[in-house]
Image (cartoon, rainbow, N blue to C red; front, top):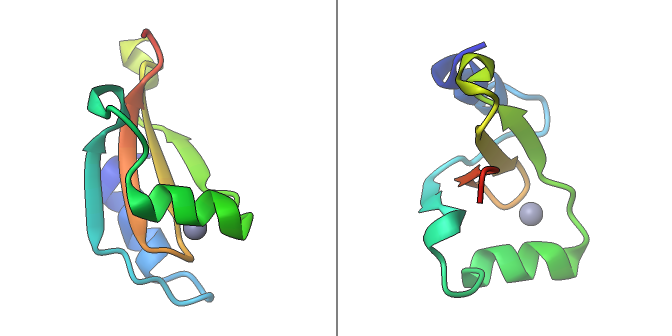
Length: 77
Ligand SMILES: [Zn+2]
């Protein structure tokens, strides 16, 4: 499943998705962005998608449908 399909599915999800914020790569953060901290405080469980299994599964995308953000992380770090 490619990224566009995933995003499309989330936008069409019953809970009503407001996917607007792409935070980029988590590996480059000095600390979590405010929205991610807030998400953790609220006890959400963002979904993680393995975007590219052919690339040894290193590119993951984390999406919280409730907060409306997404970011990538590279699990090779
Ligand atoms: Zn959240």
